[in-house]
Length: 493
Figure 1 (tube, helix red, strand yellow):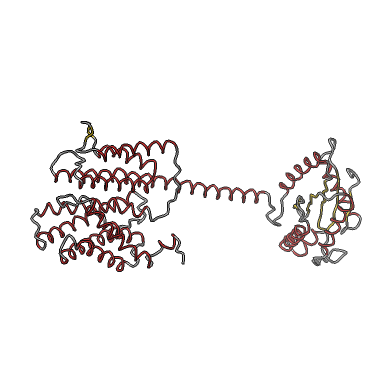
Figure 2: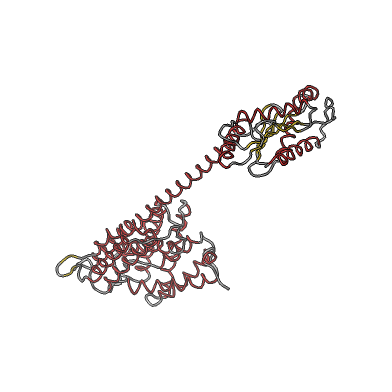
């Protein structure tokens, strides 16, 4: 069965639980190989960041199992360096250090993504500052009282504190960055290629220098501090964390191989300088990258809000336009929208040479109906007539509007007298077919009269004449008995 990346990181499954102790064990061995000086001083301790990153990534899900797995791995990896009981006690100290950091970060609401500067600061205070210090106090006591170490107590405290603190500070963001989705794809430009090439050359020079100099020129790891800021500015948290981690581990490895990257100084001073450099490197690199990431995230959020507000304004404007073009009683186009549409369609018909049809409708004897049944019933009738018209006139380009009072208008591209009259006759039959009782109508039901005008607009024709022609035809339909259609005598093609 294939396990997708997204499902793999939803919660600790069996595959993750199998890989976690193996990876943790490997980081312990890597630390002993790369970051422990010949004098047995740990420059930076990596393994605790593995468990902390796992707890943060999964938000504490299956924490007891993850702790048990890494605790077992820690004990087994330390058996070659310490007796079993000392290995167990020191592994307990490491476990408490990680759990303290995790608890403090959860207590103060730090996001496991570390995408805000305040989250990075909370990690720094909870882990490297507080939890690592408490662990150093406990571990120094174990090493002196149980293991029999002769190093002064506070020296042991400082060594443990700084080594563990730097490991949490550097490698926790690195592991979290590579287990989370990257929201922006990295697109390298020629400038980026140049920066990477220059950084690689500088790092090569620094890492190949012996005694902190090349041919008498001082070349120490501190030269890489500006490069860390540039990498943070150009490449984001993920690659910056990787850069900082590699430089820190390489610096520690230079010390273990006797290359003395900070010059010929006593071992204890060299370790202090290395740890100060790694601390500064992480604060400049990762801290700056997190700050820029937060600023970019806020910029994206602001842009998203602007787009959302713009959409809301567009919708509001659309609703306002719709409301301004819609008759409040019937829900169809109002007189203003009708006038604008007729002007537009008149111009288009004049350019194309098409025929334009205008039908004017009037509800027969509406005043008597209104007086008999009341204004509310009259309004309801107008709504029903409008709905019937809108249902019948549905071709693209046609328009139904309330012209005023009980009068309606239809603009259509129905071609020829036959089609135009058929459309108008269909409307008369449809309204009569509603069978709305009208005691003052000779037909017994509500009816409409329709006047139709047809024209292919020419240069000498006008909209006013077009409206007058349709209105005259409507008046003639009423005079000839109502509930009928009459065609205009003028402007007819």
